[in-house]
Structures are given as structure tokens and as C-alpha cells.
Image 1 (cartoon, rainbow, N blue to C red):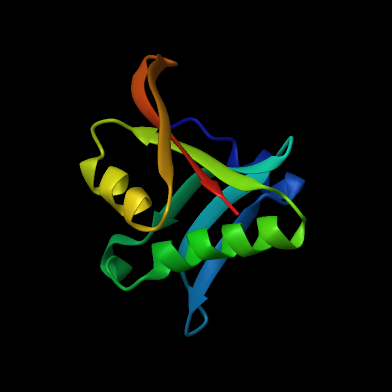
Image 2: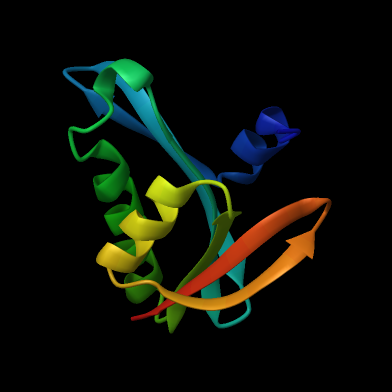
Length: 112
């Protein structure tokens, strides 16, 4: 991963999750045309399985709806089978698979 977090924070596209005033995860997203692109979601391993990632994705969806946008789009690596199943379970539809930047990626979209 080669994200420039300093630049993303400056742009205001990084949002953090706190639990009892402690950092537990983050999400990076931004508007792209008529939809929001969800770039990344991460939760501390010690806090995994508590619904934090799902809540972060929900935050992205609510923010997109409030902005009047039509969808949320994202991609994940084809090897991340847990992610594939989770996104489908919460209403994301696979729209494409392709090699992108040297990775086998699966692209998803959820209409709002």
C-alpha cells in the first residue's frame, strides 16, 4: 500500500473511528462523479469482528446519500475472499473483475 495519508488527511477524506475515545479504525472515501469511491477501510486487528468496519462503510453510505449521490463504488483484491463475501452480504454488487495496477481486483457498486 502506498497511500499518502498526510495528503489524504489534508484533503479531508480520511475519517477515523473511535471507541471509548480510542482509535480503532479509519475509512478513506471521496466523491467521484455521481458516486462516492470508498478507497480503504481498516480496523485494528484487536477490534476486528465487532462491527466497526461495517459501521464505517455505513457512514460512507449515509454521507453519500446526504450529498445526493447515487452509489458507492469500491474494489478489493480478488484474494481477499472474506471481503468479497462481506461486501455482497451488505448489498454491494460485483460489476467487474480485472487486473489493475498489477493486482487482480474485484469492483463493486451499491446503488443508494
